[in-house]
Amino acid sequence: MCGIVGYTGKQNVEKQILDALELLEYRGYDSAGMAIMDDLTGQIQVRKCAGRVSDLRNVWCQNLVSGRCGIGHTRWATHGGVCDENAHPHRVGRITLVHNGIIENYEALKDHFGLADQLVSETDTEVVAALLNHFYTGDPHQALVETVKWLKGTFALVVIFEDIPNVIFAIRNVSPIVAAYHKNGTMLASDVAALGGQADRYLVVPEYHVVELHQDAIQIYDMEDRLCEPEFLEIDWDTTRDGKGQYPFYMEKEIMEQPEVIEKTLSSRLVDGHLSLEADGVPDEVLKACERICVVACGTAMHAGLVAQNMVRSILRMPMDVEYASEFMYMDPVIDEKTLVLAISQSGETIDTLEALKYARRQGAKSIAVINVKGSSIARESDYVMYTAAGPEIAVASTKAYTTQLAALFVLVGRMAVVRGVFDEAAEKTFVNGLVQAPEAMQKVLDRREEIHHIARGLLEAKDAFMIGRGLDYSILLEGALKLKEISYIHTEAYASGELKHGTIALITEKTPVVALVTQERIRDKELSNIREVQSRGASVVLLVKDGIKLNQEDYDHVFMLPAMADGMMPFPASAALQLLAYYVSMDRGLDVDKPRNLAKVVTVE
Ligand code: AGP
Image 1: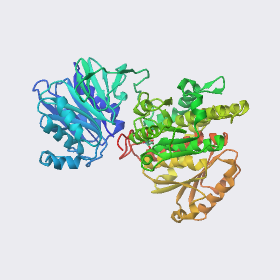
Image 2: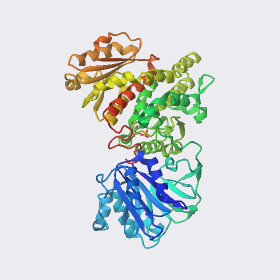
Image 3: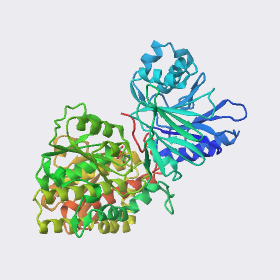
Image 4: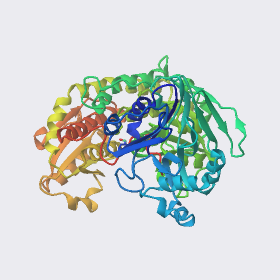
């Protein structure tokens, strides 16, 4: 997934684009590039480099160009390594373009049209530039329409033509592009975040439509070149981004914001002490009519679904599947009009989740999206949307988005229990009283973060680590393991502790670091005996345990008491501890906690 920006107007375009690219850098930061129409020479200047947007700024400031129209790109490599040649923009003939997506048939197109000798990079994007140049005979719309007819895959193409000054063209299929009037001009980008709070309305470029950006107008044409009426949406939320404040990394700031944003996520859904989805516009009938639930999500969002699954089974006694969105369409899922699909996504732009949602809806399922970014593609695709109130999450490793997803999902499950007659007044009250303690319980963990920092030092040298627990603890640890993996690069495996003895315990050796989680009263004995199994093979154990569970602390290398909540609510304090553990290991290893290698915040390629 990549970040794309285009601006044309009366302002100096270089700063506009570089600032916007910085706001999009979380979408990909392997390399960056920009192309500007030079007012003096009338030519397009292209400069690009492997590295961050800050490196690109240095490249441009060495030799400033005066221009008011340009395009920019931050790359997450899909085809070809991370190097200057593979960075975007790509130029072939009179065409200069940037691209987000994957062209699945680019090799075949290269051969079919004999383009190889025009190419200098390994990318699918440059093949598109060469193909567009092949079709371009002076009519940009006709060339774009002809080109995309040959493309298989996902694309957001943003193009400038050498002989059409100060106009930007774009066309998309699945990969997102939004456009807006902005600062004495017009702008387009991969998502609203790039507008940096300087636009109050935006439009989503419709798929397979050509959009033209002029300095004072945005025009949209369908594939038959008919002018279409743009449909603008209000930006009724704050898209500006405050900095890291006193924190060294966004991730720490976002971990510390969790009590507040969980509170905000809950507050609009607790009316006079009762659970309510009225503010979300989710009808009770949808919660009553479904016979099973299916989550489609990726990564951390999928882990939130797994935690909710524990609750759906234990409270609602309903069948619930939680599927990797990337697998969903290819596993012949059993989905029908009695299925309620939950699409969980922080960004709302994850293509795997978006395509899985579209597939489920085609099978007749009703859908509720749990989303953090307003107006995102998945939000627009879903029947209903529950927005989390996490605010902009910048660190690639998701933290506050995850726990606010849990908060929203728990309200959803609780409301289902009420409307389906599972909860009476007293049961709902008990559930709500447990849920509203989440912010305070998390704050107690955050207040003791130095204890966790001390524990983290024991993991600094590890190459491998295990996280073990049963039931809900195992679901929580899957997310804990992902956090540690993705920001510290320690190969961490979350394992159902009762399953270890069926093979994987062979990997436990002297001093193998094991993080054990024990929060569920009814299975504590089993979990504690599984911990003894790894200890008897020499493992060093960090135990995260719910306060009040009886044990002999001397038996463990480290013990961190988690504030006691109802068993079902323990994901909140436990997740805070696991997030901090991963954060401190990564920070003390001297790594870029906010931008881990190979990753990006939004995955808009399948
Ligand atoms: C989270 O720490 C990861 N960066 C990643 O797994 C992420 O959760 C996943 O890509 C899904 O993203 P989404 O929530 O924006 O759909």
